[in-house]
Amino acid sequence: MALKNEEITHIAKLARLRVEQEDLPHYSEQLGSILEYVAKLQELDTDGVPELAHGAGLSNVFRGDAVEPCEGDVRRRIVAAFPHREGDLLEVPAVFSDRTE
Amino acid sequence: MDTAIEIARDIREGKRSSEETVRDCLDRIESGNEKLNALLGTFDDAIERARGMDERRAAGEDIGPLGGVPVILKDNILVKGERCTAGSRILENYDAAYDSTVTKRLRAAGAVLIGRSNCDEFAMGSSTENSHFGTTRNPWDTDRVPGGSSGGSAAAVAAGFVPLAFGSDTGGSIRQPASLCGVVGLKPTYGRVSRYGLMALASSLDQIGPFARTVEDAALALGVIQGDDPLDATTVAGEDVSVPELLEKNVKGLRVGVPKEYFVDGMDEDVKRSVMDAIAVYEKAGATIVEISLPHAEYAIAAYYVVQSSEASSNLGRFDGIRYGYSSEGNSLLETYERSRGEGFGREVQRRIMLGTFALSKGYSDAFYSKALKVRTLIKRDFDEAFKEVDVIATPTSPSVAWPIGEKFSDPLAMYLSDIYTVSANLATIPGMSIPCGFVNGLPVGLQLLAKPFDEQAIFRAGAFYQAATDWHTRMP
Image (cartoon, rainbow over all chains, first blue to last red; front, side, top):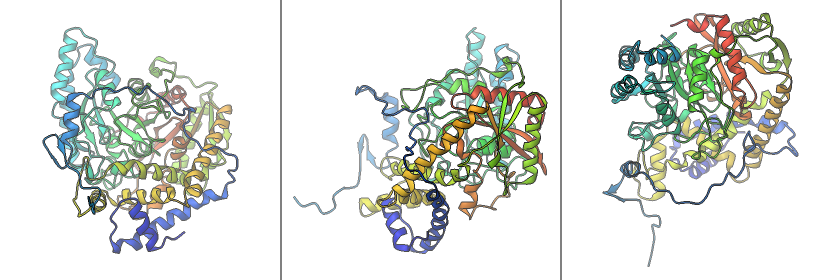
């Protein structure tokens, strides 16, 4: 199952990855051979077979919706890891580029 | 190199100090790591913490089952305040903001964390060649790979840097490098060990586990790190495990299953012979050898790479160049994402994110992701059936011994196929352990033992017996 250049570009966009034009044939070949291999799953009849979620059968493990304080030291370290900030103010790029009031 | 159990006992009895033990380990790392690149860094507070353990012991305190014992963690397990890179450029300057649950439990048991080990980027790989910080080398032959993705931890134990190290296993990333480096490596049952503070590769497959020289040390380590955790909703309160040195080393009546599908073409004849010889050791000691069938074995790699890459593509969405890690600013938000991720992630990681994104995309998710989850059920049913007949299953861990660095690097599919015997345990959520069972041309061979969920004790019994009957595990490179 070979992938066309447009398909690779589409997947890369969905995955938010910048892929250079010259790398496209490389990805096409490698992803193609992997997809060809995993296509063997289609040989199996899985009608009526459930999807496996958790080996011990856990599902929807709930807890109370309680607010718990974050340790001050942990909070400080998380803020410090932010690439762009001023003190405790965290700087992010604008989400809307053409915003008109 | 003494075992963790021996070192802990000596420290407890005042025969040696934790400080001198930790200093010895740091000296060995200092002189040996340049060649191996097994460690990415050591922790500055190690000696101070060791001294603290010695003081507490001298004051009459119980310092725990691993009191004063030096250990190493794979560089995808968080230790508060320490660098943690997952072998990636995107995290090359990241310092962990909190401790993983495993980190906390090791500290509570008295372990002294001394360093962080190299791995394939985000644990994606079978050779440790995908690390942004260079390849780790196999201590038995430095021109060969140590296996992966936890190759640094495996090499560190094999080289005698430490008695105990930890890694993560998503499709064999503990067992396969253990096999290629000639040490013991355990992947626990899914849900036995908390994943909180482990950087996620594939959340439904990942488990943290130990590398050691002996089965007893691996059992002790599992006893320390296991247990349910409110911070990881997938954990299950399992049966406690006990250290098998307390057990009689006897396998009379143990039923050992040998899957006929695992001993077919493609596997190295010498590896096959070593594993068959190991199985003969059980037979001679009175175990019953049973041929079993795992009919869906040939679909395991295909199902695994779909599930794993799908979950990875979702998990790695958090690396956006905004909240932490490498950031490359673009003219728009989209460009910032694409540049940060495109420049921060290595080739294999990008390949798997793309594969997973494709397998989850509109029009393909039923044929790929959903199909793989159904095949996963079929693979689990194979094991459920087999464990009605047998207590443990014995297989090779890897189809070959350690290969030369570079050999499979440019062929991802060939690399993926090297996990053929290990991925099934992750898909079926069962425990598995690799133990040394021989050598081919001076390179270690591993025997994999599998058991039903939460029955690590059966693996420990079988493994401890084998180590009492043979001496492969006592050899050092």
